[in-house]
Image (cartoon, one colour):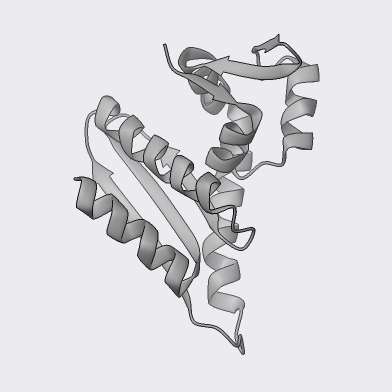
Length: 145
């Protein structure tokens, strides 16, 4: 069984860990604490993402990634924003989401932003950050496909 951490969910949703802890207190996000660390099953994760309050917040975060990218002018480094719209079965979508979350968490780049939204048979993924970081992640993703 796949387990997700609070940081994994923060990366996927764009919410801060503090916001996620508030969702835990409200009962919108459920999980279990093992040796002081929160962990969440796949079912708990998707139940949370299907909650109307969480879904609305994630949609706003996703829109903010693109809007911030478009409005930020005059930067000294090159920036990239990639939007991937895939029509795929959920198992394949889950693999893509897990891949991007793992790579983004590995890089530890605070400027790198990720957003995702799932629908019945499709998923939208947004990756924004320095041109070099986004390029490297995309290169790794397509090498593994």
